[in-house]
Image 1 (tube, rainbow, N blue to C red):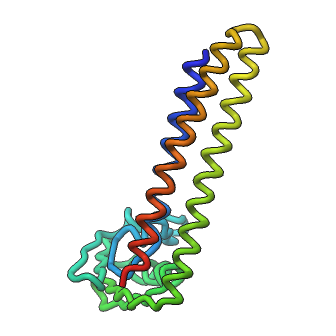
Image 2 (spheres, helix red, strand yellow):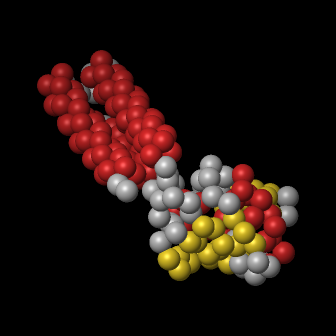
Length: 185
């Protein structure tokens, strides 16, 4: 019972780290990257559809992203969704592909992105701490109900704390790397 609780908490923390990685990759660093638009939803025939399902991406150079829709009728919908996204780049449509030129980042904009990334990192750490809290409540209940001894409960709690610390350390490391990447000119 204790092992299952610890394993479940570990899996949830791993997922929280993966979500943080995805969130960090969606913050632009001045280079063209298809991950910038990973969260963009396009209104396609009346339903929101992820951009990755509607188009292919290519990066001809460091500042340009080419988006080729599979269905040419969706070109205007995709362009509208890109314009409304938080990335801050203006797409241009030539009738076949959408070209997005990523503008040079200003120092002020880089600082704003660092704040956004720190917020996302803190959200991920809060998520991990919430997972820890729920797992601890479950462990306490197991000990209270007499399904496990207090020593086993204490050992499990130490394992849970170690897992929590290792996952928050991973988030901190990812955050540090992303900040360095953002502030690099």
